[in-house]
Length: 294
Image 1: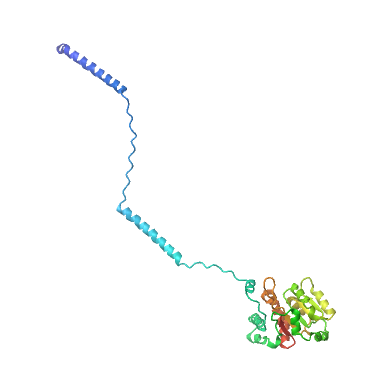
Image 2: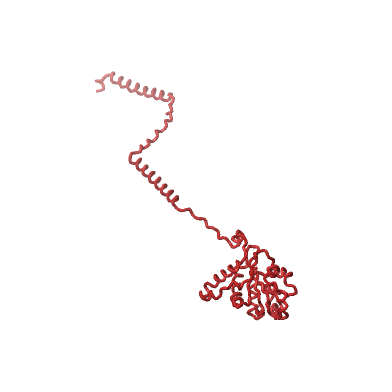
C-alpha cells in the first residue's frame, strides 16, 4: 500500500504537519507580544426603581388623609376642652384685714359672733334668751380714744367707785385682751385713769396661777387686765370673784403684727365665748355688768 501512494503523500503529510505547527507557534508569539488591553470600569447599571402603581398611590393618599383627620380631631378636642383653672390661693385673715379699712366695733358685731357660736350648741329659744339688749353695752370706742380717755368716758365717776370698792379677790373693772404683752401695754396706758386704784396682771406667761390667787387674796384690787383663758381659770378656782364687777371691756379694735384682732384668732375667740357663756352673760342680763368694746 505504501508503495502505491508514492512519495507525494508522504511529502504532503510532512508539509501539512510542519506548517500547522509553525503557524501555531507564530500566533502564540504574536499574542504574547501584544499588550493586554484593560477593560474599562463600567459602572453597574442602577437598579431599576419600581414605578408606583395606582394602588400604592391611592393607599398612601388614604393614609395621609387619615393622619390629617386624626390630627385635626385632636386639635379640636384640645381647643374645645376648657382650660385648666388655676387654683386660687385662699386669702388669709391677714390679707383680708390689711386690705380693708379699720372699722370700730359695735354691739351688733359681738351679737353676730355670739349667735354664730351658739347656733349649733343651743336651741332657737335658748339663743333668743342669750341675746343681749342694747342696755347691756357701754359706748364703743370710735378709734379716736386712748384707753384712759375711753375709760373716763364710760366711767365718769371712777374716783367714787374705787373708794367704795373694798372686797378682796374681786375687781370692779375687767379688761380682756389677746396676749400677755398686750396686757402689759394696756396697764401702762392706765396711769392717767386709775389714780390710786390698783391694777393686777391676769395672764399665764411667767406667772403661776397660785401666785395670782394669793395676790388677789392679800388686798383690794380694782382693775384686772389679762387673757380670757387665765381669767376663766381663776374664776373656776374661786381665785377671782365677780361680785363687785361692773365693767367688762374687750380689747376689740386692736390689731397685732399680722393685722388680726382678738376675735380673729380662733383660740382667743373660743376662750372669750367660754368666759362670756359661763360668767358674764347672766350678769349682763341681770343689769349687774355692762360690756364695752375698746
